[in-house]
Amino acid sequence: MTQQVSGLLFFKPFFQKTPVRVDSPLQQRRHTLPASEFRNLTPQDAISVFEIEREAFISVSGECPLTLDEVLNFLGQCPELSLGWFEEGQLVAFIIGSGWDKERLSQEAMTQHVPDSSTVHIHVLSVHRHCRQQGKGSIILWRYLQYVSCMPGLRRALLICEDFLVPFYFKAGFKEIGPSAITVSNMHFQEMEYTLCGQAYARRNSDC
Image 1 (tube, one colour):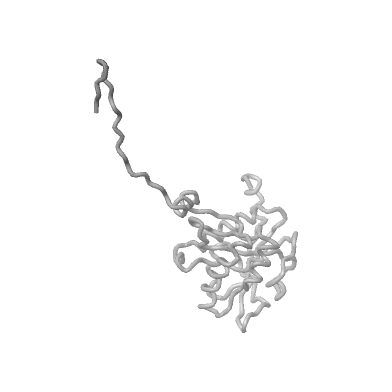
Image 2 (cartoon, one colour):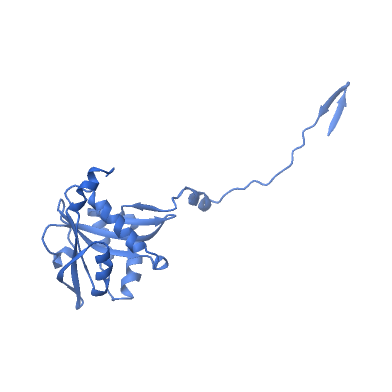
């Protein structure tokens, strides 16, 4: 639009209103979350951990490797021996470990953490039910073993598993060392070992 005043020609600016997009707080938060993140777990993650664990194990064996109190205990004492995989802020897979100082695992190893030990006892590896059959269990196990291989003083990882899981851990590099002395509700397990000291060269030539 124009207007002429005293021989001068003025242009009146014309502003067209355009809609302004305002993201909800949830949308804004999603924009800041990494698509995929691996990090140590904290006690604040305990409920999510236990819900995934309970769904995975109760339906199969009727028992959880760790109770909620035990999850809280280990995440309070040795969070550095845990690893969680988060996608857009949601926990999709995790591993919880603790320190152990004897050659083989015993019943006491199920609830104890021994600081400054050379062995990490892997208590549980679990994947969210919506993320299974996608290879996530193998991926987080590989990441975890690479991670603990970079921790000074750790020389091996031990775990117990049922017979049907032996091939899974064998493929990841574990070796079977025999029947475990640990029993849970008349369930019997195989004990398996992974040697971490073979990663010394990788530690010297990485950013660990």
